[in-house]
Length: 457
Ligand code: HEM
Image 1 (cartoon, helix red, strand yellow):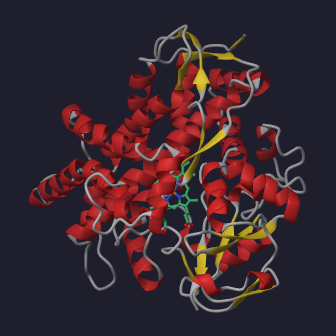
Image 2 (tube, rainbow, N blue to C red):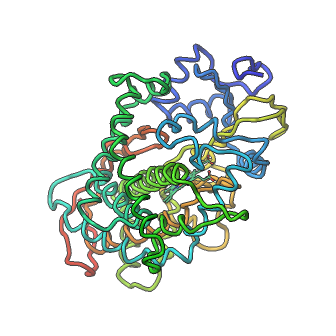
């Protein structure tokens, strides 16, 4: 059955009106749309978008659990991520489903295990130190672009194994332009509504392709060079080298075309999300002097990172970068007691689950203590990285990187606290970002390694 034929009266009620208007509100006012709909219809509601898709949005941990435990053949993610296809390519792990997805995932997983992260710690710290030491002192600026520079360089060095500054610049510049081109919600809406196939040069997709061309060329260059140097440097520990050596159970490795799509996926999924999470954490910290003070005490003592890790978790709870995930039913299924037809999409809403007052008392308060001690939220109540067979491959990498970058920020920069209103949530591609990029004022930059204190505005 086509998605357009789905009978809405069989589904939980949700916002009514022209589907184009609903889609526009969903895209342009994402967080407000979710909160308003939840208030009016409860945590589980349906929306029909003008793309012909019907989506049951579920701010319910029990439904998230059912979806994440569901079989990869019954619940497809590729259809939900289709907007990313022209950029990531059809062989990206984010777009594959069923056995193909599992094969690709198994090939990609080994370099992302927690233990391996230690190998990347030095690079992460060095990159963070260098970028933070260039922060302006005494005048407000947005941290998001600088965090993008940090996370992009980290991904280029650890995943691609690119070390030469000139080549990093050659890759970073077009990549940033590509991402910034999706910054305008209206442009994003146009991309959603127009076809990428056969796009004319001046069309929305044509412009994206023009920006992608140099990134693509450099990725292919990198793959070719590394293949040519096969085995000559056994000490290489970057992820591309490990991917080149990876074999599935039949002894087959990744083809160049697969590698291109996976590298593009890791490049995109791996840096923009982490940069945004870092910007949100700083945005929250400068508005919560109590938490900033306690963090500085912890960093100064150097005894543990428990409170820092809890702060990162709390930032990812209150400001999840990816607001939800989406799965399309390949056959009729009963989920959360609802009998759902084939073709309908179910979207566990990370954003709404993280704001449930029954799980998180005073959900709008920024309180890392929620993640200390015994009684911490369960797997399906805290899910910034999704769950099940598609849980974020880079979750350990991202958490480790966030810890190192934030620790460096806290050691080097004296952040001025503020009572300015919270920055509103703005959609940027598939993420929720701080509208002003996390504005901060640094009053002092300490030399490397010396801990500093916060000052109150
Ligand atoms: C704070 C940072 C990050 C957040 C919030 C985040 C969030 C997510 C979420 C929610 C998903 C699940 C999508 C779905 O179920 O449809 C996902 C998948 C994925 N993420 Fe991340 N991510 C982050 C960082 C990273 C990093 C650093 C990398 C790689 C270096 C990465 C690579 C991936 C990949 C490859 C997938 C697809 C997994 C699959 O389909 O099997 N992510 N991410």
